[in-house]
Amino acid sequence: MRIFFALFLVLLLGAGCVPTDQQKSVVAPQPDVVQPITESNAEVTLPLDGTIVGYDVIYKGFGEYIQDRFSGYHVGDDIEVGPEDLSVGEVQEVPVLSIAAGTVRFVDWVSGYGGLIMIDHKVDGEVIHALYGHIDLSSTQLKVDDDVERGQQIAILGKGFTKETDDERQHLHFALYQGEGLRKQGYEQNPAAVRNWINPTDFFLKHDLTMFGLRRVLSTLTIPSTARTLYPIEFVMPGDWDVEYIPSLQALNLYTRHGEGTARQRSQMLIRYFDADTFLTLPTVTVYSTEETTVGKEGYTARRYEIEKKSTVADFVDQPSWRNKRHVVTDFRAKEGKARYFVVAANPELDPKIYADFLASMEVIQN
Image 1: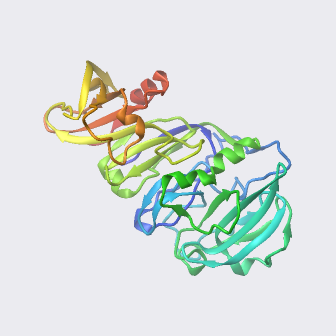
Image 2: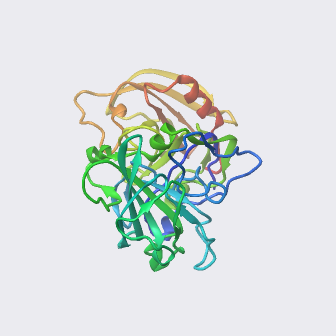
Image 3: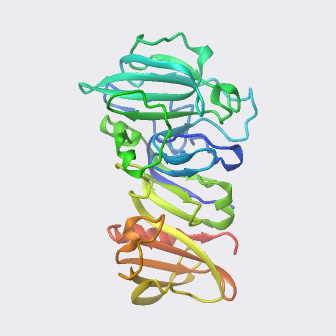
C-alpha cells in the first residue's frame, strides 16, 4: 500500500523521536528530477549536505501533534538520512554543519536526543538559537563558548538505534527559537507555545534556501504504518504540503509546511473514512447542498456536500478550526455495496483548483 506525493516544491523539514515500528519511510532523492539546492544568501547555509540527505522527506514536521514515545506538538523538523530498516553500523557518516556564525551554548547527552549541540547564531543582526539533535558527541571537539563559522562541521550524526541517538533512527532533529534560556525540549504541550519557536521552513525560505523538483514522487507514506492500513489510497499534493496523522480521529491532516503555529492551524484538507454500504451524513452538520459527481483516476462514484457545523453542537475535537465553518466535503467509494468511503474536506480558503486537482489524482489501491 502506498501513497504517491508528486512534489513540485520541496523544502527543508523534519524532527523528533519515535519507536521504530511507527517510523515513516524515507525515499532517497532522485537526481534526474531534482535540481540542486540554491544558496543565494551568504550568511546562512543548510545543516546537512543535500546530496546525502532527503530534505524533501519529513517524519515529524514542525507543529505536528505526536503520540508515541513522546507526546506533544513537535517544535522542530527531522532531516532524514536513509531507510528506516538500516541496521546499527550500516548508516553512512553524515557531517553536521553550523548554519551560520555563532557561539556554542551546550554540548552534552540529553534523553530523547542522545548527543545535543546548541548554538547561538547571529543572523540578520539577531541571535537565533539552534538545536542539533542526535549527534555523535565523540565526533566533536566543541565546548561551550567556542565560536563557529557558517558551514563549519560541528560533528557527525550519531549511528541509528544506539546511545548516540538515544535509540532513534539516524536523522537530525533541527529546531530554532529566539529568547532567553536553553530550551532542550522537542515538544510543547500547549499549541499556543508552538509560536514561540521558528518554523525551519520559513527561516530557510527567508534566506533563499530551497530545493526544487520538477516532479518528486514518494513511494511510501510519511505517516505511521497504522495509518497506511486505514488509507489504501494514492494521491498527489502540492510540494509545500505535508501530512499529519491524527490518531484520535484516525484522520489525515494535509497542511502547509510554511507558516506559524501547529500543523492543524496550517491545515488545508482533512481526510477521514467510514465503512458502510451507502453514503452517509452526520446529524451534527447542516447540509446546504448535495451534488452527485465522480472523482479519481478511475472515476469513482462520489457525492459532494456543502456543510456547516450546527451552532448547537460543540466545536469538533482535535480537528482544524475551519471544520467548524461552512466548507465543502467530497465522499467517494471505489465499489458499490459494503465499502470504505473516503471523506475529503477542504479548508474554505483553499483554491478550488488545488482541491479539484487533488481529487482527480486519487486512486484506491484496495477496498
